[in-house]
Each structure stands twice: as C-alpha cells, then as structure tokens.
Length: 272
Figure 1 (cartoon, rainbow, N blue to C red):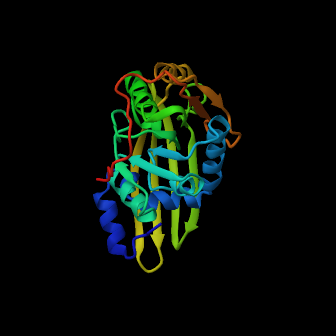
Figure 2 (spheres, rainbow, N blue to C red):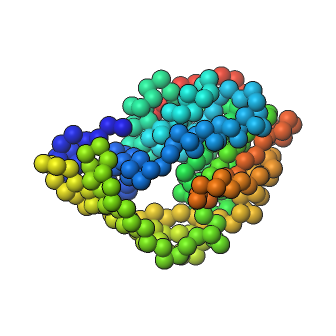
C-alpha cells in the first residue's frame, strides 16, 4: 500500500474525493487497521473453489478494489485478473500487482473476452448495484465469464432480516504512521441501507483531516440472489463462513448451461 507522503497530498486527496473509494490509501488503511484478514478470506474462497473444481487454474476477481484479495489469489492460481469501476482503486491494484491484468469494468455489463475457472465478487461489492434487474444482470455477466465447471463465489451485503438499522460503529487505530478514527451510523430506507461515515485521520507533523461520505447498499433478499444464480444457469448454495460476515453464495456452472454467444478464447489486455 502506498500512502500519501505529505500533508499537501492528503489535503488534495480529501478535497477532490467524492467517496472513500477515491482515497485508496485511506480506504486500505481503514480495513487493514481494523484487522480484516484478506489472506485468510482468499484462502477460504480458494478452498471453496477447488472443492467444486479441483482443476481450477485461473480466477477473475470482480470488484477487486485495491487488490487486497487479488494478491493472495495470485499466489493460489496460475493466472488471475481483476475488475473494478473505481479509478483510484484500480490504480492501487495495478501498483500492487503490476503483472496482473486489472480492468475497468461495470459488473453489470462487462465483457473481457475470455472465461475462467472461477469468478469471485467479495467484500459485498455486489451491494453497490440497485434493483433486481441489475442484480440479475451482474450475476449473468459474471457467469458468462465461467467455463463449464467454473465456480462463482459472491459475498452479498446483508439481507433485509440481518441488517441492523440504527447501528453505530466506531474504531480508532494507528496504521503505518496514520492515526484514524472512523464512526458510522446506518439506517434503512426502503430496500437499501444508508451508512453515513465520518473519518478523522492525522499524521505527525503533517496535519489532521476530516472526510465524510455515505454508502448506499442494496438489501437484496436471499431469494433474489438464488433466483439470479438460477437465471444465470447456476444453483446457489449459501454458506455461513462463521466469521461474523454475511456469508457467501457459491454456484457451479454445469456443461450445457451457457447461452449462445458466450465468451471463448484467450484473454486480451483490457487495462484502461
């Protein structure tokens, strides 16, 4: 992870950012500082994939962010690629993994021109879309990038019945010389969760900054995910991983379930 090196760089980043995803070093510091274990999570997902497809050799991580899971997938598979829509996150992923193709792509409509043994969409990135049609489009787009026998793993956002409205979260920690305080408040509005988050962070001799944004995430029922998997030709299996997270959906693409015009052939360099 590359942090900004001067107070001026931090100030410019805060002033120009619309969301926390635009300040990739702060985004990374928050979750690493809070103890998110990307290595263990990637290892668990790799085991889920190989339990269903022992010969799996390549993987696409959709919504890869700055590449924290992707770096561990790169050690577990012969070939990996990433995809995301946030430019700052993509820049961090490319800096971390210069030899890994990382694409700017919308999960609802993307076409990378090749198929994989596995496709993943972790850290509830799927919750950033809205509406049942978009959910089905995203799952179908991911499934189209699987070869027969390929495995799709999606970590959802919370279900309506498991989301805790009114929840307040707070953390203060130090990471690589940056002291960070994060406070959030979550409410439900219709079929979405709305989490207002405030960040205060400081570096010795450089300054103190405040940034706030709001995360809107779709609260899809479990049945909607299962229907989206079925619509894409996969039977969904929901697994509680026992890590206090929302769990994962896992599906395998059987032979003969791909629609006509599916992707074939080798990868093209889709970096942008």
